Length: 151
Image (cartoon, rainbow, N blue to C red):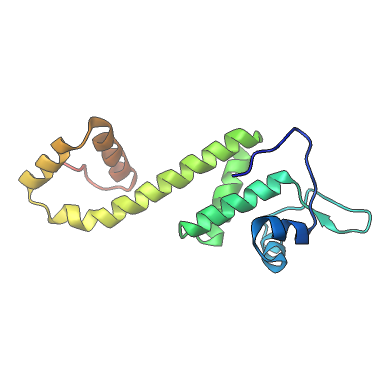
């Protein structure tokens, strides 16, 4: 993600935002129409103007899309993070953590059929081979998913 040069925010028209992000102006317009993006203000000529926070938000949206999130899931996650805090740095970190947790949950779900096929002795050996923090993380994810413990 891009870091701000200073505390002043720059404003971009859709075409400029499209050039900076590599998206089409039509995509940015669509994201705005479905509520993923919000113009920071309007110009004297009534053009929508977007700020640096919007630029960061677009990068976040594109990262989440690359991880196979739907636009609806992205909108829900971003909205919940916006309600949690207005601090941009904290919001960005929370979004990164939430994305990482969701990715881990997906990976656990993919591993679940393999783990279920293990014999009890194999599962115990595998569990002992994991570091304690990894084992605790797997247990926590399985618990969150409503599954029995790994062992």
